[in-house]
Amino acid sequence: MTYVVTENCIKCKYTDCVEVCPVDCFYDGENMLVIHPDECIDCGVCVPECPAEAIFSDVDAEATPAMLELNAKYSEQWPNITQKRGPLPDADELNGTYGKEADFSPGSGPGD
Image (cartoon, rainbow, N blue to C red; front, side):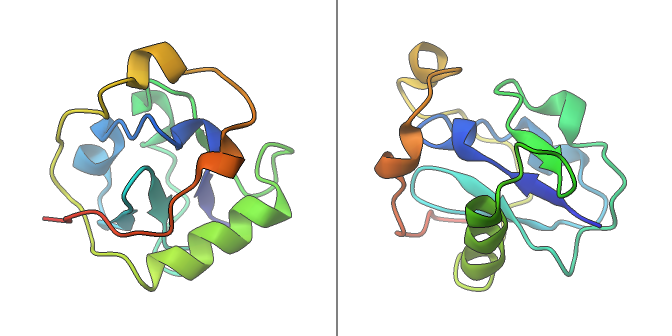
């Protein structure tokens, strides 16, 4: 099992989760984070740290096949992130809105 960053992270990108991850399995995209499924140890410490409530176990309904695939693909391409940074400018306004999957950017973030 693994944890998955889901749609609500898109255009929010809070990074509270990366500071608590004991195995540094978060990767930095332009407008969201992803978790590397082969590096995640299924500890769950990131879940309560996410202000967007965007992290779920891969067995939860919110962890759709599309989000599982997105996390796996982009964790291989984006740089690792281990340090907390501020969220995206409209994060608080967009937190909890649906239909953000269309706003996903495949571009990478700066990483650490």
